[in-house]
Length: 252
Image 1 (cartoon, rainbow, N blue to C red):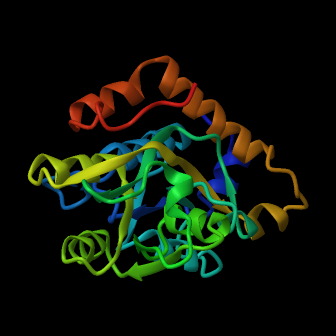
Image 2: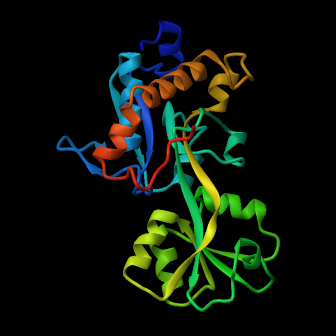
């Protein structure tokens, strides 16, 4: 699949595709290549888009999703690989999702919580990674429980283990890793939300072209490319190669 010049001018106006990558998502960024560029499913998607545009791929790295989203108006990147979230949709147009990661609550094994609804009660505290998609989802959804936000996913897990909160909200694969080394925890089922990963484009970039429609030619192109990666097995191959096939699912 190859883009025409008008699509290239929209997505890579500087002649290079500047792809913003969230380094905090350990499932999607699994390491570094010998040339120093990030490796993983998310960088693979960015490289595939750059190849379809026939331009080099230049990575713009961020320590977390909040920092990535906060630079949307700074012309720091052309596409951003980030989770879909309603609050971010005010400034970012999202493609169709290409992956989903479940987010769950974890509690002490003897805690009284039986389901997700039993957690949203007055006086209950929930540790979460500040600015993550599930933090934003919880902020919009919870009515009574209080979110205690921490600056990294690792710190949120550490604070829960130290008993600073009643509940931990996190990505399910990360929770399963904790449970494998500590039998005093349990995961509350079902997942409270699914974190859908997508390709984002700054809303002002498309709107400045006179298009307020998410189905612009540029977004149509990215959606078609994502569908091609799912259809030809490239996405599944990337997940398998990076050892995360058991932790991620491809939306159908």
